[in-house]
Image (tube, rainbow, N blue to C red; front, side):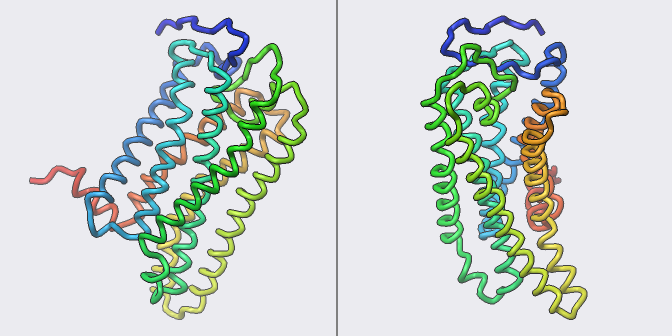
Amino acid sequence: MAAFNFTPSDPSMFILMGIPSLEAAHIWISIPFSTFYIISLLGNFTLLCVVRKEQTLHKPMYLLLCMLALTDIATPTFVMPKPLGIFWFNLKGISMAGCLTQMFFLHTVSVMHSATLVTMAFDRYVAICNPLRYATILTNAQIAKLGLVGLMRAVLFILPLPLLLSRQPFCTNRIIPHTQCEYIAVVKIACGDITVIRIYSLMLMFVVLEFDLMLIALSYGQIIRAVLRISSKKAHQKAFNTCTTHICVMLTYYIPSVFSIFTYQFGQGIAPHVHIILADLYLLIPPMLNPIIYGIRTKELRDKTSKYTCCRK
């Protein structure tokens, strides 16, 4: 495929370079990227459609799965069009407003994703530790309220980042060696005093990542205590099976997230193109895997999905 040189000369534009030192392989890199994106969309839209059509799935647990699916659709959708434009057509230019907008939506969805995982951990805690009160504590209306609170938290936490960056002077050479307007990549080309931005971003990372992980660990600590008090091995297995799926989904999200942060902070010896590929895969792999994990591990969902996807005589 021929590359069209649409790199802008407007100095107010940012230039996204794609994956530096791998420009010759951009077309080939786009194949797995677009494949992961398509699989992610198909899997998450299938989950949403199945839950919507099946009245028996209109329960808090499956509403939380729908919230997770929506974030899994939004995350790569805010990211992939620009990399594919770079890989296929050499469309590297992006306005400052477009760059900060992409950054805002991307990180807002990420924080919302984390809040959803916390709510799912609380859901499992109530289901196992207070099963008799589950129907009264977690209703569909309560899940909707928790989702709204999570969304408001994400917007309020992330909004200051683009607002602070919009007031910054940027260097004359506005080249971002990345496929997306990732926060750290944009901060690196700011030429003003970024002390306040760095302090706020560190506080934000602590509040979102560490606080959310602490709440999840607390929920599962209580779950383990409750399960160990049960004498029946069959009950043990059933309780752990209900949590295994959620733990798998959390691992696919938090491990790449923490790894990506540490490679940016302490991985100076790692090649830049490795950083960029890891950051992109972190945004593509979990949304692709989540519906697959839930489809395999959740029998009720698996049966309902088979009802619509398998050919019947």
